[in-house]
Each structure stands twice: as C-alpha cells, then as structure tokens.
Amino acid sequence: MLLPQAKESKVNENLSNKMALGKSIKMYLTIFIATTCIYMVLYQYHMSRQPLAANELVKHPEKSSSSSSSSSSYIASYLWAPPMLNNSSNSINTTMGQGLVQVHGPNATDTSSVSSSSSAASNSVSASGSSFYSTVSLPLTLSSASDANNKSISTTTTSTTTTTTTTVANAVVSATTTTTTTAQKLKTTTQPSHAHKSMPPLYIITPTYRRPEQLAELTRLGYTLKHVLNLLWLVIEDANKTNPLVAHTLDRIGVPYEYLVAPMPEQYKLTKRAKPRGVSNRNRGLDYLRANATEGVLYFADDDNTYDVNIFEQMRYTKKVSMWPVGLVTKTGVSSPIIREGKLDGYYDGWIGGRKYPVDMAGFAVSVKFLHERPHAKMPFKPGYEEDGFLRSLAPLQNNEIELLADECREILTWHTQTKKNPAALPFNQTRYGNTNLAFIEKLLVRP
Ligand code: UDP
Ligand code: MN
Image (cartoon, rainbow, N blue to C red; front, side):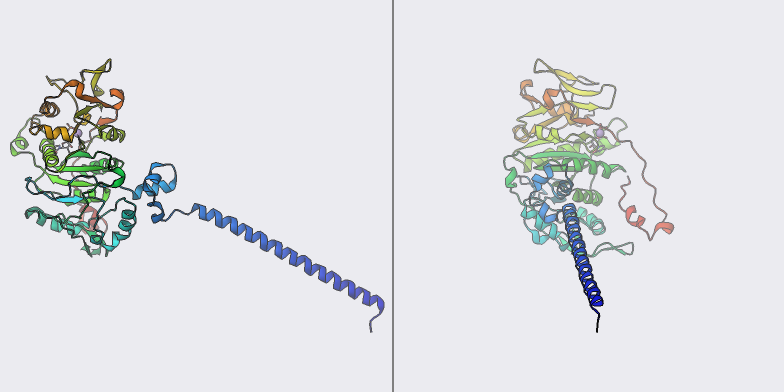
C-alpha cells in the first residue's frame, strides 16, 4: 500500500510523463510538417527546372523559336526547321541534263516512309506543321551512291526510305538508322505550309566544289539558311557525280535542298588563266528555276561567304533586281551601289574593269518572275565579268527599277569572305587506328 506522499509523487510523475509525451509528439509533428514543407518547396523548384518534353515544345514552334533568350526556346529552335515552299521542286526531273540526285523537303506527307528511328520526331513535328530530320546512313549511301550516279536516275518520285542495320569497320553503326540512298527520295508535299502562304519563296543557288574545306563551308552556310523560312537551297557541285558526304551533311542540317551537279566545261578546267568559278553551277541553278519555279526570288550564295539573315527577308520581295553593299576583306573594304539623293548613281568597287554593273556576286537578288521574262539570261564563262554579264543579260533593266536594300545601301549585311586553302588530310595509320572511331572519321574527310 502506497503512502499518500508516494501517491502524490506517482501522480506527479505520471503527469510529467504525459507532458513529456505531449511535447515529443508536438516536436515530431513540427518536424514532420517542416520536412513536408521543405520537400514541397524542393519539388516545386525541381519541376520548374525540368526541361519541357519535346512534344510540348513543338506545339508552338514559332512562338518558342522567336524568343531566343530562354533555354526552352533553344531546344525548340533546334527542333524547328523551315516548312516546305510552294513550288514543284520535288518533282524529279532528269530531262534537264545533269540528274537531280536527292530531294529533301521537311514536310513529308508520307510519314510511313520514315523509319522507326525518326518517326517519333516526324510525328510530333508534322502535327505542328514543322519538319523532321532524316538522317543518311553513310556507309550504305557510300556504296549505293556510285550506283546511283552511274544509272540514270528514276523520273518518278518514290518514297523508299528503309530501315537498315549497317556494319562498317566491324562495328554496328545503328540498328535503326534511316537510310536514304542518293537515288531514293522522300515524298514531299508541293503545297506550301499554310502559315507561310503569303511569303514568296527564296531560292538560294550555292556553287560548291570538292576540297578539304567543303563540308565546313556548307555546314556554316546551311545553319545560316536554317534561320530563313520558305527557302529552297540549291546546292550545285562542280563535279560529274554527287558526293554522299555532301548529301549526308545537307541531310543533317535539315534545310530543304536539292543537290545537283554541273561540271565546269573541260576547256576552262585546263586553262592556266583565271577560271570561271561556279559559273556552270549557277547556270544549272537558273535552268532548274526555269523548269520548277514560278515565283519568289533567287540569290547566288557562294559557299564561302558570310550572310546576315536579315538580308534574306529584305530580298524576298524583290520585284525585278535588288542590290546592296558587300563587305570585302580587302583594302577597298566594300563593293556597293553609290546612292546620291536617294538614287542609284554608280558603283564603288576596287576594280571597275569597264563593267556596267561592277557588283559582287553576294550583292544582288533577282525575282523569279523577272527571270522568266528574260529566257536567255545566263552567266558568262568570263572570269571577273560573271555578275556583270548576268545582270546585262537581264536587259532591259532601268536603274530606277533596281531596288536598294540594306537601309538604302547604308548597311553591310553580306561579306565576301575567303577561307584559307588547305592541303588534304593524310590517311590515318590503319595499324594503329584501324579498330577505333578514326576508321569512321577517315570516311568523313573530303580529300581532293
Ligand atoms: N567554285 C566551283 N568550282 C571551282 C571553284 C569554285 O564551283 O573550281 C565555287 C565555290 O564553291 C564558290 C564559288 O564557286 O561557291 C566561287 O568560288 P571562289 O570562292 O573560289 O571564288 P572567289 O570568291 O574567291 O572569287
Ligand atoms: Mn569565294
């Protein structure tokens, strides 16, 4: 039996035990609530940092690609490529001599032609009216390209993209690589994207030729052109046959293009004097436009020059001929029309040489309709007089019909740049590098 004192102390003890329990419950509850809050805050922060899923981005490709400051717009602009233009460029045409080898347009209507590796991308972007990338499996292309070049190329547009497994240098390249051989074409729509129906198409004629710098030049120019809507890039090589490495590069860039060949005539190749560089290529481009284009604007963009994308939007509305200054990396500094009291009053250039139009190749654009009105217009095989000869062949053309762009020729938006010529790369040592990645790289180098 407990004494009353002991009883009292027992009650006190019970009471303090209960209080301690209450306190610790309170403490645990506080810790629990605090932890939950911290977790919630961290989760919110984490979610806000998550990049958007690809399909979320491409729902608003233009909106997101126009604001270049946020990180998501960077991803969106990567996924974005210009929609196809409204011409019949995709009709394959071998009647024009040098065969068209590859048509590549982004708005492929036949998505079933795309293999599993790229179908996800194509589905999401075609739903948004944008484009997809098709990749070329190089090894297969390399082997089939020579075939394609020897045979005459089919006149029908076929959609024959296949999925293959390719082995090179004893390594599996990819089990799901989309392969487009040079003779195979993606079926593309001839309808313009609705959003750009009112925008005249731009035809960019780019002469190119085999040399160690070629793919670097085309990559740089290609990614410049990728900023421009409703554009077809006519890449025309001074060669007898196309190069799968060039086709591969163009495919990877993802700008709508046609890759044609137009060799320089033998008589000019053999001369010891200055050669008419890129002339057969540009004339081939003009032939292409006469056969395939009805409207829009053409521009000769050499593969080694430098272009501010603003000039493309300005030249797009050319009625006949437009001109603007071209920065030169010489003592002359610029080649430009001279504007006095708002009117064209001659030309400034380091060398006039009796030319009526002493302008640079990068300094003018011509409307396709106007080209159709001058069926005999072409570029002469006359070194130094290519621009002058071509512009003269567009006669009659009044000076006041020449539109003066780039803030009435007060801005430089194009530059005539030159890349240092380089010797060909030496072959890799097969014994040392035969079973490494360098065996692949070896096949990617353009050697003269
Ligand atoms: N080009 C060509 N074949 C040649 C040399 C050049 O097709 O034998 C192309 C070249 O890729 C470029 C254009 O013609 O797009 C002008 O050539 P280049 O840049 O060498 O001339 P430059 O600008 O120095 O006058
Ligand atoms: Mn050049």
